[in-house]
Amino acid sequence: MANNIQESQNAAAGCGDRIAEITRTTKETDIRVRLNLDGTGICRADTGVGFFDHMLDGFARHGLFDLDVTCKGDITVDSHHTIEDVGIVLGTAIREALGDKAGIKRFGSVVLPMDETLIISAVDLSGRPYYASDLVFTVPKIGDFDTEMVKEFFYAVSYSAMMNLHFHQIRGENNHHIAECAFKAFAKALDAATQYEPRISGVWSTKGAL
Image (tube, rainbow, N blue to C red; front, side, top):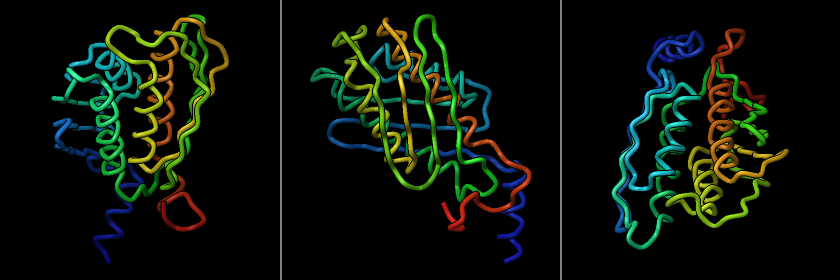
């Protein structure tokens, strides 16, 4: 009991490492993700999909997460399995790194501009998965990245992390900007939600658990 109390107090004070390393191997992908929620924005992404690596770098940098992602996927087929499965593993890493979520703010949101684009992202680390988005893309690909995979990636992250994740596109014309703005907005919202609230020592829920 004493150890549990000390762990809860440490979590509420922002002590301890919130790091997870997850591997997942299927016939379609072989993935390793290492995530530090309390990093400085260092990223190494090697998925074989150049634009996706760029998005992951923006996520890590603007969320101040340290992120290391490697994926060997069946990109000779297309990028679908690689991007979706990285989302599954990243979401799992977020969930594992958060532990019991004691002391965190739980909710986070941001209105993020990128040139002509303006996107709202909101996160609730509720333990209940839900994804909603009205992001609009007008081209099928950005570089080697299928734009329909933005939805599949964030859906996979939200469900494996057991979080509510919402996007609302206020405006936007350039497809590159829309995708990048979404990744950065998610990073800022998640960073806010994972911060500690010094006024509470348990989980921020009337249920007593998240």
